Length: 299
Image 1 (cartoon, rainbow, N blue to C red):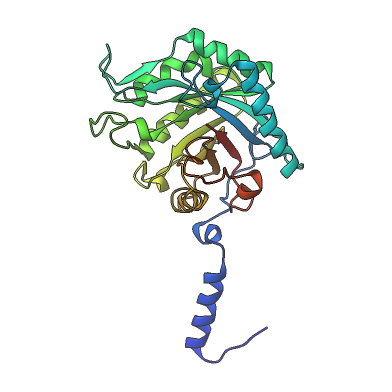
Image 2 (tube, one colour):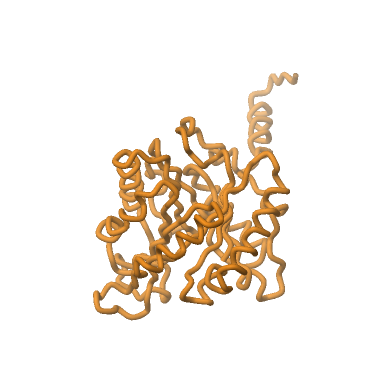
């Protein structure tokens, strides 16, 4: 124990202790949340997901390879995560871009394409085949999330289907073309979607829903402190940026850790992260982050 008679010295010592704390502690991690309800996936398990669309080889690994090869590769990644933290089971997942932002307005004038139900069900069946869970990912383009999301109640009413939204491709406010400018969601939009999920859980007597929000810039999510937590919705803020490991770590710190919500995720790009010669970050690398991401997505 140390005792200081000099008030100024005491203040300096207190500041030094504060500066020594990890940035996550300074920002409010771990977030105080209620105990997870029965059936909740998080934080009991870590989710490892393959992202993409089977109609596109360029959108992500989910569509880059034939189904059997893709599932085999996902199992390899799952095994790596099981090995790195044996105490936390790994939940495999397929993450389908179900509404794809477009550079042309299309018939609806909304700069987005909704995948046919047949495609959605096909990938859902793949997830069930490997005892995985399924995410539908919405890139809304110029359509309001409030009109688009209810269209997917038919699939979200299943207990193993969860939701992701991508602020990058929500350009309804700016009126810009997707891909030409980074979009944004406000906390009010995120709160709408989480309330929609909460209502579905109650309506169909479902286990809690996982809700992914992608983010890699400050303005992609505005008023983050106003995001509401709900008993049956597990929000994951997913670091979605690509680049060298140092840049990804900085983005995680600046845009995910700096504004705590509930849980964190981290996206790895097999091609974009490595195209300049940088190595793909490993489970060991990600386990050094604080907080450790509980949702891992490969594209």
